Image 1 (cartoon, one colour):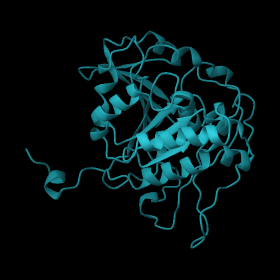
Image 2: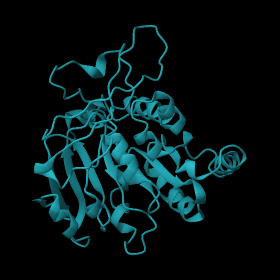
Image 3: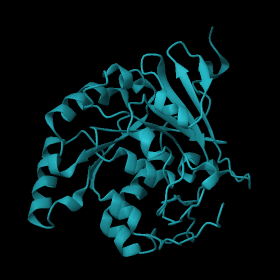
Length: 305
């Protein structure tokens, strides 16, 4: 049966779906922390074998979705015991600025010898764009290239490559040599390639110069523009309480900047993380003024808040 939406050629609005992918220990969890403004999962859970985690905007919740579509509510602590055989993916909801403009799908590492590729392959068709993380000291291995060749066609073609832990390489010739090689080997495969120190970005705090030096500023600006222009139908309106129609406000330019915060969530210590948080922020510069990186503002969360 043909629906009215199909007849009109327009499907219902939804947010773009951004997958974070790469080999094990390539920096996906750190990237997720940076984009979400803090750790979505406790360390002891991220170290376990988990299926893909689909993170959306909404009240905090965790649900395991089976291969036949059945859903089961979980606590954060129960995630460590999720069965890969019985679970297709984990659906999480949380409040984070990034999730106002996209859904994040945190994929397992492709090189995990204890996890079959089918675990993450089953969700590839749901993905719009990918940020692929490759470790600077072993950038763009043959195993990565082989997997990317298989899955790239399932995306919308607007994908970014992050060369992570770039601070592990000496500045100058060594970094230039690696970036030149990666650029040649991935020519035409990604919309852009960014060298980045994700830990440096998080530790930058209020220092805009360090944020820029980490490589995060250019990457984040590109990512936000990519998400806002994603062709997934009309972008869903922002869920902010002010009710403003963000999808149709042409003068609004959305960028991301950091707010370093320290949270003391003793009542929710499963998801607490001491240290700086990186929180995306909507920025609306004056009309007709060029976009510039904005110095981040530091906020200290109230005790117990």
